[in-house]
Image (cartoon, rainbow, N blue to C red; front, side):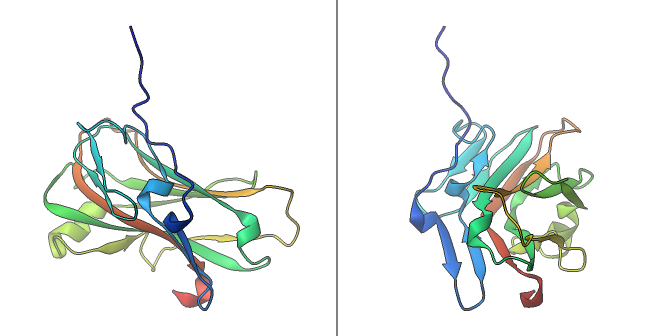
Length: 180
């Protein structure tokens, strides 16, 4: 029996991770993320280059990424947000919270929970950012960094085992707290 890798591994192309120096804002496109089941066309459709990732259906949502902490300013507080939308035919989000995580270097993880189905009821088909600005996922870059330390972040709904679909991931945004 042959096995194939059904998970999308982050691509390193420089056009997938962009930095706005004026705002110190980083934008990370979906192809630069790790997406569990991302290479299986039954579950995900990934656009070429800088386009979005379309979730068709999964029971295990796990989308993660990394960014070198050397790229961020020391002693500065940042936020991590996913820019997403729910398509008109979305399903499975109403009662399933989505968890967002950030981890600086080897430190403890910080988690936020969001019910993204609530947004779809009030404004279906519109892009929105999660976690919301009233409860941001924040982290601080320490003054002292070890060599090669990374910022890790992710979006998860893996605990309930319910099928969900219709999520469109546009990008991940990392920016200073002062700019939100």
